[in-house]
Amino acid sequence: MHAHDHHEHSGEALSRVAEATLVRSGEQWTAMRARIFSVLAGFEKPASAYDIADAVSQAEGRRVAPNSVYRILDLFVNANLARRVESANAYVANAHPDCLHDCIFLVCDSCGQTTHIDDDSITRTVRSAASGAGFAPTRPVIEVRGKCADCR
Amino acid sequence: MHAHDHHEHSGEALSRVAEATLVRSGEQWTAMRARIFSVLAGFEKPASAYDIADAVSQAEGRRVAPNSVYRILDLFVNANLARRVESANAYVANAHPDCLHDCIFLVCDSCGQTTHIDDDSITRTVRSAASGAGFAPTRPVIEVRGKCADCR
DNA sequence: AATCAAAATGTGATGTTGTAACGTGTGTCG
DNA sequence: CGACACACGTTACAACATCACATTTTGATT
Image (cartoon, rainbow over all chains, first blue to last red; front, side, top):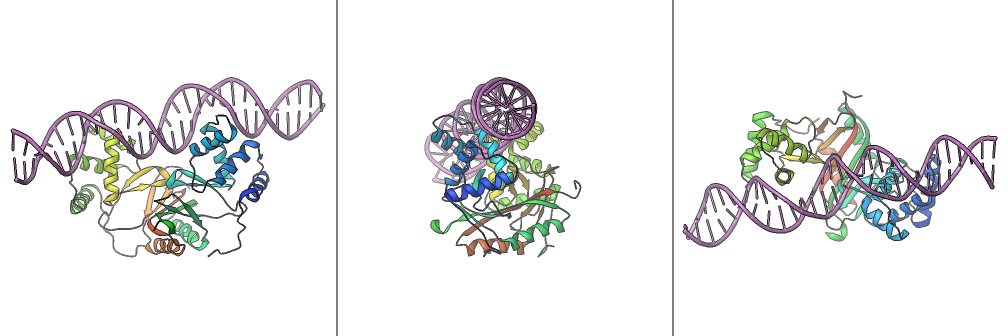
């Protein structure tokens, strides 16, 4: 269960929220960034920078290098518009860029589908366990590999 | 705090336990495997397969390809002799191969030092949160990026 | 509108991580 | 001996990531 209200967005609405969030953080919402965000949000699984580069190249009818994609993904991750799934070397759009969470990702080993849970009580516990060990946590990485409901 | 007794080993003792564990799982403890395990255990930070290949090559006075290292690392991970740190694309020796845990790694962004906590109550909670979402967990990946006590 | 500086993107090269395919040596067992 | 299983070697390549530097776009200022 969520500990508070979320506003999950999708499609156009999500892009608008992403734009607002990015602009609020002092960055520009350029055509390239809009394109990459919408492509990323269009994937139903975590997408690698190369996946995105391919899809964007396709959509634009010209070659877009992974390099450019990485730059923008880093920006997105910093601005909370996207998340990196460490155990998949891939990225997902954040469905609620306007609120901060330590996410928990559930990654299906069969189909790759990835969902996420926001459970602040868990992530708080993880952070405090780290602190208790004399460690100053900045970014918990909590991902669960296994099988999704469809693949069980 | 640990929920039960651990037997943490190091050096020769650790290698002996690793050997016993591997053999018990029906695999052979070969010269190459012994070498790779001891090299891995000798690193004080998570080591990439390439790091290990270099160190082993050095120690053996001949070229050992990363490929061979990967094979053996996979074997080790399956047999619980080693763990993969996903957010670092690297491996660490397991200091107590004889007991199973979902580990929590604390990875310092400054120096790379990585420690681990075993807190079964946390990992149980993570697993059950996943189950609650209709997901069948097989391997939780719980890592915390931040700063270690020395680097703070 | 013209200019300029900063920011964003393009481009090519290169570094790092991970797999695939197939060959070679060695021990076991008939 | 011959057949087989297993570990390991070797080469090639695929996938992921970054660096350095050129060019274009943008927004601010005049």
